[in-house]
Amino acid sequence: MFEIKTDNAKYWRDCVDAIVNLVDEGAFNITKEGITLKAMDPSGISMVSFSIPSKAFAKFNVEKDVSVGLNLDSLGKVLSRTRDNEALVMKEGEGKLLLEFIGKSSRRRYKLPIIDVRKGVDKEPNVSFDALVDVTGEPLKDIIKDANQISSYISFKASKEQFTISAKGDSGELEESHENDGSIIKKLETSAESSAVFNLEYLDKMVKACPVGSSIHVSLKTNEPLRVSYGIGEAVITYFIAPYMEN
Image (cartoon, rainbow, N blue to C red; front, top):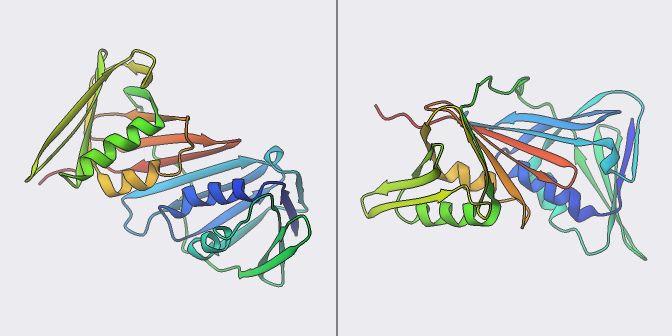
């Protein structure tokens, strides 16, 4: 049994949005230390790894470790109805997740079934990345939107001098480069020049929930899975996506 409370229900909604952008079901592992989730998207192209410490919540009572499998799409729809200045209490009871939204003079309760989910992933891909790039979130989102106009794939390339993003399609080509000047590129560290191509649809889903003003951490190695991560308050969301390899 557990009882978890956040004074800001919209914060938990934002955390779940970052997960449900990519996967439709998964199991939250709840321990005294906090909440974690690892899951593959249905296609197997990408995965998400989420963690949030217990200190991020106003109340975090956990009697024993528990895994709570949920339809994340359903959870996301419930959380989308969060109102301003509401707190949220989550409990387990009778095979259901109980969610109680508490306003100044109102209470609203939902019950969602706890389900058995397909076995998730236990570990993140083991990649020794050659390039680490910190990019301001909003410009990266804009570049991905620009690339979406002409292609379904995007190329990342990191060298000691700059980080380059390019896309190519039947209707045209795009290339945008940025030096490590502290504005858009906050950090650029490379032990070897690295480049790979990735699916734009999945990358768009990954960066969508990054808070305004935050940095997105990109880890790259030639023709290896890409790692993308950022913080949502105390929570950390990390994604991996397999590279696109032309036959």
